[in-house]
Image 1 (cartoon, rainbow, N blue to C red):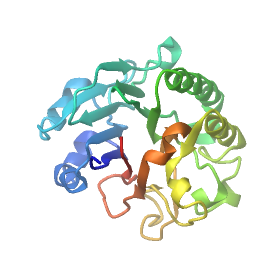
Image 2 (tube, helix red, strand yellow):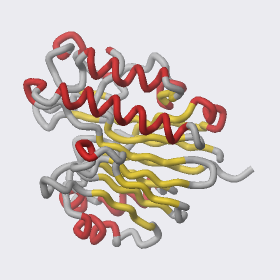
Image 3 (cartoon, one colour):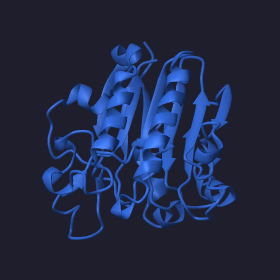
Length: 260
């Protein structure tokens, strides 16, 4: 049997900023076969310039069309895909560089940076429409072959996925009932949360910490970065990991290993 493939996802909160914080050496430590990035916050050529420091990988980059230095996603891979898709083919959702999809014979790999509902939940209504459209997009892919979808989903699914659920519920972006419902519908549509499949009740396992109030030192965090996979490849999953020891962003990497 071949060795499991190592998939890593990381919201880098600015590719140029994290480059100055040992990004390249940390990626080499993680040894991913596939590295999915969110919130690159740069134009395509700027991202590609940084990623050229990892020449063993091919890179596929999406960037915001409307606001420079905002949002943005990328996938680095050791193996060439059979096809590459950018965005989800819906104009109003395709302006901010939020999705990259690579197709392989056995699966689709999707990385996503889901819109944040914003301060005062100013963008919650848009977020709800995004969730519905993205769910449809994943479902259509899943009808063709299994899907591995990863990234910053900007929602804590359950109360154990954030340090202060009561004070944040329906008040803070990422923990409103509408966002939770959107994520729940995705799980009911044939996908599963890989980390929770291994650790259904594990508390204090977070992937994001605010830069304020010593949140990371106190582990006052949120688990909003996920790997979701099609239910029918659950038996191929060998590992799901959060890597809080890796720094440089307000998020840490998360990963899975799959024997495909």
